[in-house]
Image (tube, rainbow, N blue to C red; front, side, top):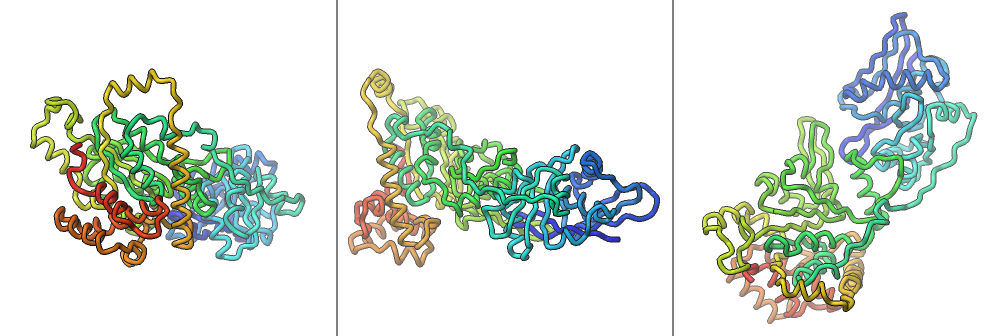
Length: 512
């Protein structure tokens, strides 16, 4: 007799159906799994055997064949353990086959029969809803997240034995709680007030947070570029429910965020990859593609320090996601898309030694070295970064003055936060959604929402001609000006808003 159970395999950020079929026959004691299983699935044979016997049930003493279909789809991960074990018990006659009908089952088994958390809770829930399954059976640590995603009832089980008793109708299982919590909620908040000076950079961070724009900071080492970048997530609002589900789903699928605690992320991601990060590490990929740093930064901030030190191929790979807010990874058996809607914050020195424009004769770099250093960043890449700002070195006298002062610092951070929240509320009303910002404006929308008066139009055209701004730069200046106007509670873009936006785009602005 062939017994079957339903489960799912993860393909990118989506789940596809997998049918687990088990048959027991012959007298030769052997256990085989077919259907393109990876090494983890092949190793499940020993886990399943021990889990069944340690749960008080008998493992077949004859040949067991398990088929995972469709056979052409690669199967990876330990989530197939529970459906395989249940289908074997059904084929052995220890469980009725009909109890597995229209139920989606996933779970990793321990040797003692306990169930461990698995990735892909949201993807599994969405698939179950689209295929009209009557319920989902998942490990208790994963079930709460799945229950948040859809309308299909979710049953949380802690062990193989409990799952069998539930399927036999011997016990009842309540649906898990759907409580939104954040694992990062207790982290110390980083405030703008902690950064001495750098008023231009702080203003640029405020514009970034309000409109979702990208930022490049140029300045000598120790000027505070990293300190500033780390404070940007604390200027952003907490994730809305839809955003939190997206972010948690991506981190689950990256298999870097599975633990015994179930939590829906409500804090914006902040990713800080080292400049030695590989192309696959940044954009995602692998034989079975998983999200990279740009997707792990989705709805948050991606900070790239020492910007020119990244390999050229890695930097150029940012061009597509910066424009399209997603990354497409092509493989021989198809294409996968991962979301990548992040705010890019990059930081760099003005020259290889970093002392250019600081003290007279401090920089020892010749013109050729500086040119080669700056040429590591292509024009098309810089074109996609909305704001370029110079972060000067803080005079030692100013630093000494601040450290000896007993006065309370001004509350810059919370004042900026209020302005950002007000500007985002204006954009939510404009776009009828809180998920779109001025940085997401398409060209036709920019013409509609970024209208200029005659004087402002002449100033922008003159700047575009004098400094050879591309059409992309021209449009991005308008988007930044729209954000500045929103921060100033202005319905119309004024010439002062446009001039400030232009100040972040014009070349050689970082020469002090």
